[in-house]
Length: 336
Image 1 (cartoon, rainbow, N blue to C red):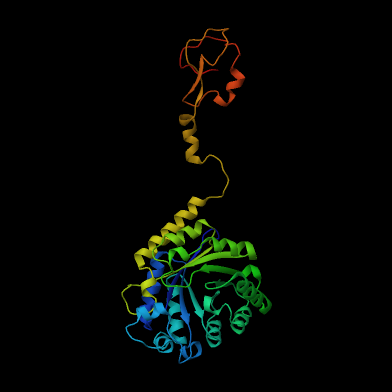
Image 2 (cartoon, rainbow, N blue to C red):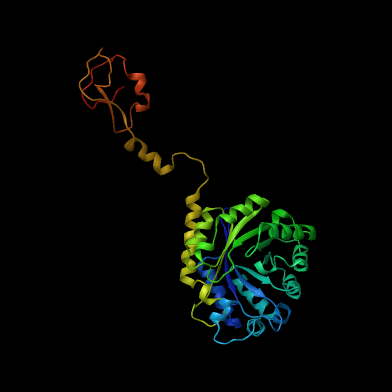
């Protein structure tokens, strides 16, 4: 698991298991091997999530070989409660946190019975008041995705969650752009900081762009959670594979995030351990630029500054101009 000074990295397995339990287990293994802290699935009953007439999103239509309805597509991607237990057991074996997003009230009850550590609210449910109340009543930490929303809608969702029983400091809001893949010019990473300032809560970023550069950049802007889709193969059939990272890419993203976290440091500007060894070599001292006799005054003509920085700092230049030398100096002698 992540330490307190590291971002929580979530591998969004989502529905990339294609309804196959074995494929879901392989996704857990891939997430653990890549260094993710948690692997997240989706819990839903298709007939409680979408109507018979609901159409697929445009990105889902592009990924589908048929013109099936959203309901028909979702029915093939359901995981039943028993399959959830298998996945949780495997996560325990691999020392990775199991997460799942509930998409309907019945699914919240299923996940509650499985005693999950925290809740993940998807962007599409941020305006679903009964759903928000049910999640808030659980009293556990919440990760709230805010794709497609305004600050006003985020505020209303936070108020609903708080009134239902969760504390404000238990909520982390994820900025994201709900499109697959998300156009880079629509990412607007600074909006993540706007959310943090507006509501005084922890923030993170759920990434749908291609590649790994944007989630790594989000860390530099203060993200405490990063979520990114994971697939075993982008060419597999299914709605989300094409906008997902393959295992090697996900591992590279994790490495990049951890490196940036180390690079951010504590914000205190001071010489580092390695820099201290270079100060004397790189900085300069007051030295004689020519022969100077004892009793002669130091002037701009007979003083200069050169390496090494083991003598008097040139920042004291004005203090030495006009003073009398107390001994003889040859050119390049350090002034003492």
